Image (cartoon, rainbow, N blue to C red; front, side, top):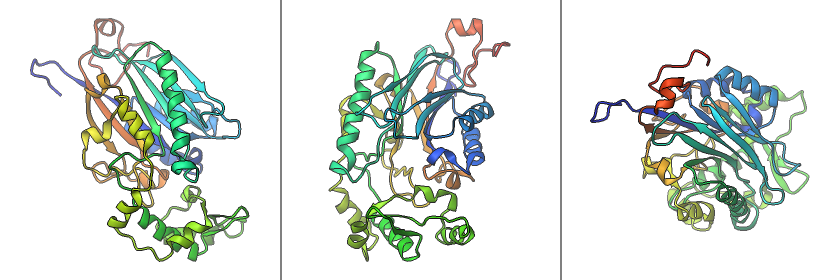
Length: 363
């Protein structure tokens, strides 16, 4: 992309991706989706198997940073993959305040305007059955994150991840989801569990082919059945026979609190996707029934000024053959454009694909 003065601008690409319980049985699909995205920095959520994660990093040619969860009962980690030089990194754990953690790093971009960029990878708790549809818990997590950021010297930064929260003005396709959920229950794919919740049909080893065929009949890849949420039985009773309609979705949406996204806006953070696409739905979940936008890249104002594009990978603007089966979330990408590298990078070489300086031979 050429500027008026004839200098070349290059793009920095950030991606966030919830891979659903480590991408189990879908590792090759996740790898191929990320290869095609070709991001400079990736925020991953629901990382489970560390050897598999390291293999993914090797396949992508990226350094792997691992964020162990705050709570010991959580088996899912966050991770950052990056091809940019890492100046420093740290995993902030907040026992009793965050279910996962605030994994963050400082990367050298090679850009004159923002030579060093901090990236925070987060995965806020779902817990929709808790107070204010889980927003009370997510506000505690956000507060812990903000305290971490405020303790450090001011720096341009991004917050990328699965927030499990809705933004003001965004819709939730609730009625279509409840209609499908009740159909799954009638088909025996969602059953009553021992704790009073509805859960996905268990597998006993001998019925796998039958269960897989039943999931496929609903257009759901059977490898994604782990993403079917457990809900109280009363939800099915209340929503039984509910029509799928946008006006009813808007009515139900009034009862959902949106404190987390409101607080981020009040703090001056910019929702990059919404900045680029003021009216697009941008649904990131679930791939088998796109119904909500819960994955975000937020930028501090000085970074947001350089945002030039954002897209949901697997949507119509950015089709991908594997995104529908690789996870129950679509990846989200945000692109930023900067000027040429500073003199230090022009001398020493820059390892980024978006830098116009010659690559170092020691890469």
